[in-house]
Image (tube, rainbow, N blue to C red; front, side, top):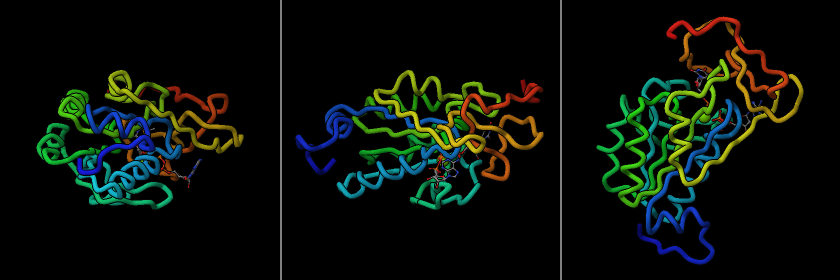
Length: 202
Ligand code: ADP
Ligand code: TMP
Ligand code: MG
């Protein structure tokens, strides 16, 4: 990392300079996870730190070469098939950003730990819960090993209250259904209706 930390540097950034750490940004769809990830990564780029950004190949919603928010904020990224590829491309990086982490295999937890133990700042964004309201893939494990966890909330489309749940608006019961506002709505827990059926792969 080229810029030394100062007393004005936020705690997470000072800490990462010396020791490496894991930050998790998590919440329901439309809650601003990707915007917050991009904000932190841009600040690292402004500080002339070496930044590598990854997302799973199956997230082809808006772009395969950029992380893109629902509000069209975007930052260049590399799409990878499996978590171990992240290690392959992170050798020189000071800061590693990962979006849509819920879609990665369970190896993503060890990958993040290995990178943080090597002194890197790892920032991971992903859904805490799936459409059934169940913890999504490796996210609970990432939240457990992280030094910093930020929970973001959206606006409930039924009530205008803070939203922590994602309502699937179609009958599809696959766990993975890449989509946006045509398939999903953010809901406060009081306005969230869990699906009657179990998803088809359980
Ligand atoms: P996430 O990655 O958590 O799904 P993004 O960072 O991609 O969220 O997008 C957040 C943006 O989505 C907001 O700034 C806003 O422009 C837009 N948005 C659309 N629907 C909602 C909603 N129900 N609540 C909040 N923001 C919404
Ligand atoms: P987002 O959190 O950046 O909005 O992206 C979440 C992605 O996850 C989006 O493509 C929809 C997908 N998704 C699933 O595949 N299964 C689910 O159960 C939920 C809630 C979302
Ligand atoms: Mg997102």
